[in-house]
Length: 361
Image (cartoon, rainbow, N blue to C red):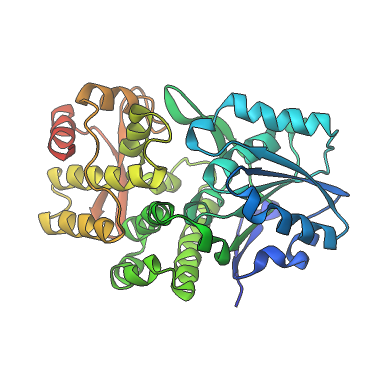
């Protein structure tokens, strides 16, 4: 059964539809299509699986499509790849009423959204996420952008979609490591603001890994519900929304330091969250048992809990480019307790260096 949530942003509010077989439901898309064409941005992995199906669904509404197929991988989340989208849109003379549809994971969603925000100074944008990570996190909330060699997601724009369509059946073709990577963001919601959900995850991780559809739909729905509430309260990350970055300051440093694409984003977030939990313990906020419990849940999700040793100096360098840096000082999302996160600055550098030294492998 399909479930629908709403991201409440006044006139820019939009629905998130979650269920099985939604990719074939033309009625869900038709009300968001104004012109006679749509541009579908996808990649070389997703296109053979779902591009033709989406084109057929669009055809039922009388809408033709311009497919734009990009290379697959975080390492291609660059301005050079972004220009491929612009090239195709200009070549096919796409207009202001031509929606850009992101069909794929977080990289495709972020780049398509940034292209939609900037092409002709703004065109309609639809998210059809096909990975667990994108269904529970990156497709909701309007964060778009590309990477820079000095930092992840440092160039972009806030630009909300008009629709998010999360078809649980697309997760059937997701590789196991990508499924686990998505679970890192699912776990995050339980840790920062939803303790009952955290308890549910501890009890149902086996079902999620076995791709039980009911369990997956519940996890996506509960995650999107948390994300939608936070985005509605703080769209541009001036306060509460920053808490969604638990583990990301360390995680982005891992991704940048190792080279984009070496670690999956969710893998880096998992290891980064363990580092954040360790730092929370050193501040006296978490108990040893809490940290052990967090590690155990990530391990149960088949995620890495030992970050790579890229050197303390490089960790500090990459974290210095984090978007939460304020007045030149690092700020971290840490855990006051399980189910309650807090953004804090002023962490002693010696304590931070000790966390890095003790956690890395």
